[in-house]
Image (cartoon, rainbow, N blue to C red; front, side):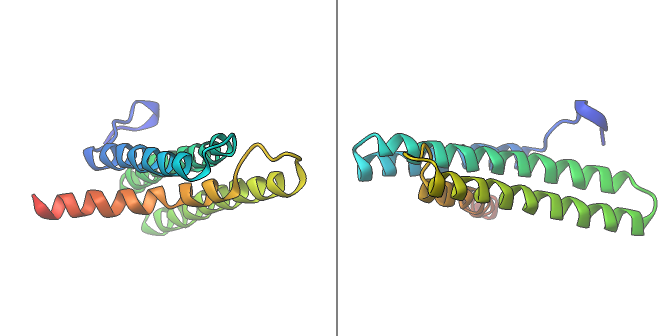
Length: 137
């Protein structure tokens, strides 16, 4: 295991990150077909924002696992994992809250809340696809 900023990402993490981007692209194309107006750009911005957040969360998860495996004390490792879990979900909540506030109070809103919500699901879609592909191998 490597520590610090020189940590290499596992193949699975890279595959998940790639699939997040691919799922986001499919959702954006679907939004462009659905909206056919400037609203498609706002929709795309929402998808891109939350998909980028998902890529960050996957990176943080990989880093958490690697750092925890390097720890000697099980209780410290367990507490570290719990804290990192809360940080990742706090980030998701903060971004969605920010998007919701922009959607409610900025006129015209430059981000579409439905794009942001669909972008959150790119992580789950990516994990399902990567897992399914692993099972086939």
